[in-house]
Amino acid sequence: MTAIVLDGRALAATIEDSLRAEVETFADMFKRRPRLVVVLVGDMAASASYVKSKAAAAARVGIDADVVRVPATTDTGSLVALVQSLARDEQGPADGILVQLPLPEHVDTLAVLDAVPPDRDVDGFHPENAGLLSQGRPRFVPCTAAGVQRMLIDAGIETAGRHAVIIGRSDIVGKPLALLLAAKGTGGDATVTLCHSRSADLPTITRSADILVAAVGRPGLVTADMVRPGAAVIDVGINRVDGRLVGDVDFESVRKVAGWISPVPGGVGPLTVAMLISNTLLAAELRHAP
Ligand code: NAD
Image (tube, rainbow, N blue to C red):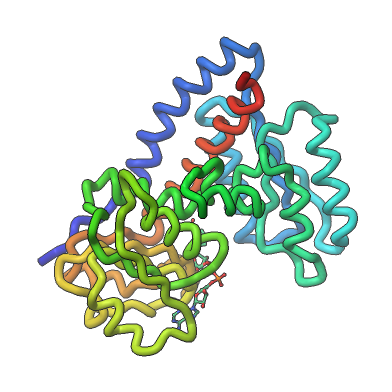
């Protein structure tokens, strides 16, 4: 068997096309464009490149995007104050406010993320949005988790009644994805197992997966012998190996066993960005909702 390769770039382009039309409707109605503000702390190359792609995607669909750059030495209090000042719309309406992670070690990341008002929290990291998702009434869903679910739905990969195994229990990917796949409805109703660094006998668990998602940050973690023939394998990992981007899945061996596989790059990454843009439009629309 050779797996179907899930083309995240193509799907993201399709999503952008429909968002572009919705943004035009919004702009006609409210005589302004939705606006995303991204706070970039320091000069980490990976963060700068993610922020660049987010701003470029916003521009492609007609959403205004501004990047506020501050030095790596900025302390927690100043970052909280910056986020609060953005939320006062002093430099224009900030429908979506995003603080690019990771923050420098001396910064209290949760304190900064908690300062983002929940109705502008387009990353979906605020406890209020995490709570809404856990109760099955999502508002802003964390973008990578939403992107993975969208990819499964678009490819026609059945989730209802299937066993989904997620490796990685982070608040930004693994946990929200587990909630989405276990929720009632389209792209949900799966039986979910959430694995992590302390999980015993990972290969036995992963071999029982109809859908296997790797979100760890370890190249080559998922090998062909860990995959049930015909399973859908979604690779969230982003790792730099010898100057090349690779995921957590050993792509060449796993593609011979899996039914579907998402590549890195060109898989989940573009969808994460598309979901952010979708969340930004939603934030702008919610501000004008009666
Ligand atoms: P994280 O470091 O917060 O979490 C990693 C998780 O992996 C933890 O829950 C840990 O328990 C688990 N883990 C570590 N070693 C393990 C092992 N040997 N076996 C099983 N589980 C193990 O990471 P994160 O922020 O969730 O990101 C995970 C990966 O996804 C990273 O490579 C990150 O760059 C990537 N990522 C990609 C996107 C995207 O858009 N494609 C978005 C976010 C994160």
